[in-house]
Length: 205
Image (cartoon, rainbow, N blue to C red; front, side, top):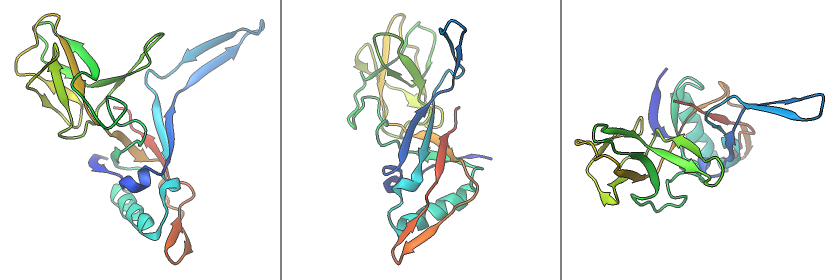
Protein backbone atom coordinates (compact mmCIF):
# COMPACT_ATOMS: atom_id res chain seq x y z
CA UNK A 1 0.00 0.00 0.00
CA UNK A 2 1.08 3.60 -0.49
CA UNK A 3 -0.10 7.15 -0.08
CA UNK A 4 -0.84 9.04 -3.30
CA UNK A 5 -0.35 12.80 -2.92
CA UNK A 6 -3.28 13.57 -5.23
CA UNK A 7 -6.52 15.28 -4.22
CA UNK A 8 -9.95 13.68 -4.64
CA UNK A 9 -12.07 15.58 -7.24
CA UNK A 10 -12.69 18.89 -5.50
CA UNK A 11 -16.19 19.56 -6.84
CA UNK A 12 -17.42 16.22 -5.49
CA UNK A 13 -15.64 16.59 -2.13
CA UNK A 14 -17.20 20.01 -1.50
CA UNK A 15 -20.69 18.51 -1.89
CA UNK A 16 -20.05 15.67 0.54
CA UNK A 17 -21.21 15.19 4.12
CA UNK A 18 -19.08 14.34 7.13
CA UNK A 19 -16.80 15.55 9.87
CA UNK A 20 -14.83 14.50 12.94
CA UNK A 21 -15.61 11.39 14.95
CA UNK A 22 -14.42 10.34 18.42
CA UNK A 23 -14.61 7.12 20.42
CA UNK A 24 -15.77 7.55 24.02
CA UNK A 25 -16.62 4.79 26.51
CA UNK A 26 -19.49 5.79 28.80
CA UNK A 27 -20.24 3.60 31.84
CA UNK A 28 -23.33 4.39 33.92
CA UNK A 29 -22.82 3.46 37.57
CA UNK A 30 -25.51 2.13 39.92
CA UNK A 31 -25.83 5.62 41.38
CA UNK A 32 -26.69 7.01 37.95
CA UNK A 33 -23.41 8.84 37.70
CA UNK A 34 -21.15 8.29 34.70
CA UNK A 35 -17.54 7.36 34.10
CA UNK A 36 -16.28 8.49 30.68
CA UNK A 37 -13.07 7.57 28.91
CA UNK A 38 -11.87 8.98 25.59
CA UNK A 39 -10.12 6.15 23.76
CA UNK A 40 -8.65 8.23 20.94
CA UNK A 41 -6.17 11.06 21.45
CA UNK A 42 -7.12 12.46 18.03
CA UNK A 43 -10.48 12.67 16.30
CA UNK A 44 -10.90 10.80 13.02
CA UNK A 45 -12.82 12.28 10.12
CA UNK A 46 -15.38 10.42 8.02
CA UNK A 47 -17.11 11.66 4.89
CA UNK A 48 -19.67 10.36 2.42
CA UNK A 49 -18.67 11.55 -1.04
CA UNK A 50 -21.81 10.10 -2.61
CA UNK A 51 -23.71 13.30 -1.81
CA UNK A 52 -21.32 15.29 -3.99
CA UNK A 53 -21.91 13.31 -7.19
CA UNK A 54 -24.28 15.36 -9.34
CA UNK A 55 -23.60 14.22 -12.90
CA UNK A 56 -22.32 11.43 -15.08
CA UNK A 57 -19.04 13.34 -15.46
CA UNK A 58 -18.65 13.44 -11.67
CA UNK A 59 -19.23 9.70 -11.49
CA UNK A 60 -16.71 8.99 -14.24
CA UNK A 61 -14.09 11.09 -12.43
CA UNK A 62 -14.80 9.24 -9.17
CA UNK A 63 -14.70 5.87 -10.93
CA UNK A 64 -11.27 6.58 -12.41
CA UNK A 65 -10.01 7.87 -9.05
CA UNK A 66 -11.39 4.84 -7.19
CA UNK A 67 -9.80 2.38 -9.62
CA UNK A 68 -6.40 4.08 -9.47
CA UNK A 69 -6.49 3.97 -5.66
CA UNK A 70 -7.44 0.26 -5.85
CA UNK A 71 -10.41 0.81 -3.53
CA UNK A 72 -9.27 0.88 0.11
CA UNK A 73 -5.65 0.09 -0.72
CA UNK A 74 -4.03 3.49 -1.37
CA UNK A 75 -4.56 6.69 0.60
CA UNK A 76 -5.08 10.13 -0.95
CA UNK A 77 -5.77 13.79 -0.16
CA UNK A 78 -9.21 15.16 0.70
CA UNK A 79 -10.32 18.78 0.92
CA UNK A 80 -12.70 19.42 3.83
CA UNK A 81 -14.80 22.36 2.66
CA UNK A 82 -15.32 23.64 6.22
CA UNK A 83 -11.91 23.02 7.79
CA UNK A 84 -8.95 23.49 5.45
CA UNK A 85 -6.93 26.41 6.78
CA UNK A 86 -5.07 27.60 9.86
CA UNK A 87 -7.23 30.71 10.08
CA UNK A 88 -10.67 29.21 9.49
CA UNK A 89 -10.89 31.17 6.22
CA UNK A 90 -9.05 30.97 2.92
CA UNK A 91 -6.71 33.78 3.96
CA UNK A 92 -3.78 32.74 6.16
CA UNK A 93 -1.09 34.68 8.01
CA UNK A 94 2.14 33.62 9.69
CA UNK A 95 0.56 34.41 13.08
CA UNK A 96 -2.44 32.05 12.80
CA UNK A 97 -1.22 29.11 14.89
CA UNK A 98 1.46 28.67 17.56
CA UNK A 99 3.56 25.63 16.64
CA UNK A 100 6.31 25.83 19.25
CA UNK A 101 8.75 27.79 21.36
CA UNK A 102 12.41 28.05 20.50
CA UNK A 103 15.10 26.67 22.81
CA UNK A 104 18.18 27.52 20.77
CA UNK A 105 18.65 23.85 19.83
CA UNK A 106 15.49 22.45 18.21
CA UNK A 107 15.19 23.06 14.46
CA UNK A 108 12.15 20.91 13.58
CA UNK A 109 8.54 21.73 14.55
CA UNK A 110 5.21 20.07 13.65
CA UNK A 111 2.44 22.12 12.07
CA UNK A 112 -0.62 22.03 14.32
CA UNK A 113 -4.08 23.58 14.53
CA UNK A 114 -5.83 24.37 17.81
CA UNK A 115 -9.58 24.03 18.36
CA UNK A 116 -11.19 25.82 21.30
CA UNK A 117 -9.57 28.11 23.81
CA UNK A 118 -11.07 28.42 27.29
CA UNK A 119 -11.40 24.91 28.72
CA UNK A 120 -9.34 22.17 27.07
CA UNK A 121 -8.16 23.14 23.56
CA UNK A 122 -7.60 20.26 21.17
CA UNK A 123 -4.28 20.32 19.29
CA UNK A 124 -4.42 18.57 15.92
CA UNK A 125 -1.20 17.71 14.05
CA UNK A 126 -1.38 18.87 10.43
CA UNK A 127 0.48 16.40 8.23
CA UNK A 128 -0.65 17.39 4.74
CA UNK A 129 -0.10 21.14 4.21
CA UNK A 130 -0.78 22.48 0.72
CA UNK A 131 2.48 23.13 -1.12
CA UNK A 132 3.30 26.83 -1.30
CA UNK A 133 0.69 27.87 1.26
CA UNK A 134 2.81 27.68 4.43
CA UNK A 135 4.14 30.88 6.02
CA UNK A 136 6.14 30.94 9.26
CA UNK A 137 7.24 33.63 11.71
CA UNK A 138 9.63 33.69 14.65
CA UNK A 139 8.61 36.29 17.25
CA UNK A 140 6.33 37.82 14.62
CA UNK A 141 9.03 38.18 11.96
CA UNK A 142 8.86 36.19 8.73
CA UNK A 143 11.43 33.38 8.78
CA UNK A 144 13.24 31.17 6.30
CA UNK A 145 12.28 27.51 6.57
CA UNK A 146 11.57 24.30 4.70
CA UNK A 147 8.38 22.26 5.08
CA UNK A 148 7.71 18.60 4.25
CA UNK A 149 4.35 18.40 2.46
CA UNK A 150 3.94 14.74 3.45
CA UNK A 151 4.53 15.16 7.20
CA UNK A 152 3.90 18.82 8.02
CA UNK A 153 7.33 19.16 9.64
CA UNK A 154 8.84 22.65 9.50
CA UNK A 155 12.64 22.77 9.52
CA UNK A 156 14.84 25.80 10.21
CA UNK A 157 18.45 26.00 9.08
CA UNK A 158 19.25 27.75 12.38
CA UNK A 159 17.43 26.91 15.60
CA UNK A 160 15.12 29.70 16.82
CA UNK A 161 16.41 31.42 19.94
CA UNK A 162 15.45 30.46 23.47
CA UNK A 163 11.87 31.55 24.23
CA UNK A 164 11.12 32.65 20.66
CA UNK A 165 7.44 32.22 19.66
CA UNK A 166 7.11 30.17 16.47
CA UNK A 167 3.87 30.63 14.55
CA UNK A 168 2.57 29.51 11.18
CA UNK A 169 -0.26 29.83 8.70
CA UNK A 170 -1.22 27.26 6.08
CA UNK A 171 -3.85 25.54 3.99
CA UNK A 172 -4.12 21.78 4.40
CA UNK A 173 -5.78 18.58 3.20
CA UNK A 174 -6.86 15.49 5.13
CA UNK A 175 -5.11 12.16 4.44
CA UNK A 176 -7.86 9.61 3.76
CA UNK A 177 -8.71 6.35 2.05
CA UNK A 178 -11.90 4.85 0.67
CA UNK A 179 -13.75 2.71 3.21
CA UNK A 180 -15.21 0.37 0.59
CA UNK A 181 -13.83 -1.90 -2.10
CA UNK A 182 -16.96 -1.87 -4.27
CA UNK A 183 -18.73 0.96 -6.08
CA UNK A 184 -22.50 0.67 -6.36
CA UNK A 185 -23.35 2.99 -9.28
CA UNK A 186 -26.80 3.82 -10.60
CA UNK A 187 -27.28 5.70 -13.88
CA UNK A 188 -30.37 7.74 -13.07
CA UNK A 189 -30.66 9.41 -16.49
CA UNK A 190 -28.69 10.12 -19.64
CA UNK A 191 -26.42 12.66 -17.91
CA UNK A 192 -26.78 11.74 -14.26
CA UNK A 193 -25.36 9.09 -11.99
CA UNK A 194 -25.75 8.28 -8.33
CA UNK A 195 -23.53 6.48 -5.82
CA UNK A 196 -25.72 6.34 -2.69
CA UNK A 197 -22.79 5.58 -0.40
CA UNK A 198 -19.14 6.40 -1.00
CA UNK A 199 -17.52 6.44 2.47
CA UNK A 200 -14.10 7.98 2.99
CA UNK A 201 -12.17 7.76 6.27
CA UNK A 202 -9.18 9.68 7.61
CA UNK A 203 -5.85 7.86 7.81
CA UNK A 204 -4.21 8.87 11.09
CA UNK A 205 -0.46 9.31 10.74
